[in-house]
Image (cartoon, rainbow, N blue to C red; front, side):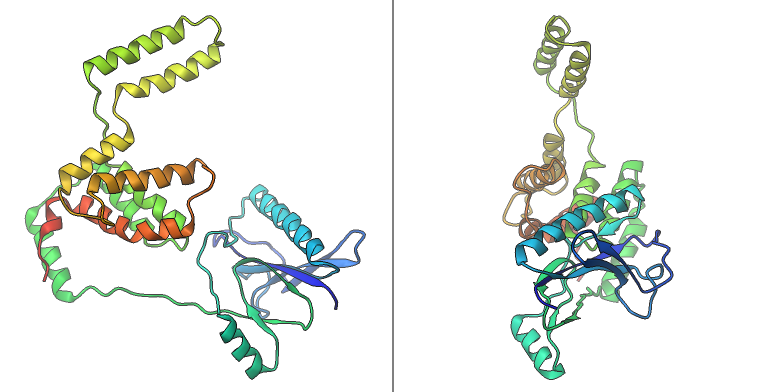
Length: 318
């Protein structure tokens, strides 16, 4: 088959399924003579059974046509699944399973078949010769010595520290971060674990009086609509207390002290992470790259651990 093909591999949420009791389902693309094919990632499974699914289409005349079609049908798939409330991971910012070009050449030479990476998400490739797809999955496990666990657990028992509701929620968020495969989600949960602990203090009397003046001027402004006034006043009232960034810096300094994270003081490190969080959550362009988040998330895990440990962080477990 001449031309180009595209392929979209995605994971569906474990609590949902598409109830098709066959391994493959295809439908024609109008005015092209081509087809879209939805299939399970493993041929022995039905679409209903498979947690990893693939949509592909073969035989587009030019690379540009294939790219345009791939973009169109990926967007359509994302919208349709959202409408059906089926969660899907398209791998846009998730971990990849990638062989090097040398590795692919070796696999192709040994199998006598053209081998491509079984990429998570969207990929475009020449239709001929028909390829097969190879994947490689790696995982790492960090082992904690028995002696360290015993010492930490005994110390925690003896100190009899009572957790507040905020601390319990923070620990739950921290724990949830370890079960995430997507680094963005892990990063956001770690920042949220800190936010859950924060209780912003009131600003100085002078600052609060200034906020009151701003609220009064907003109320008396005849050019603003009632809805605009309500929105502005609601935002202004938040200014009676310090910002999340200020509260986070204060908490970091109080609990941690002089320790460094990514060569930054605790206050500077929290501000750095909170800035990345804001750009990611609010869609600031350009979005933080996976490299930027990857460079801080490991240190952020240690940072949150130290915050949650409190005085316990300085206990020598060796």
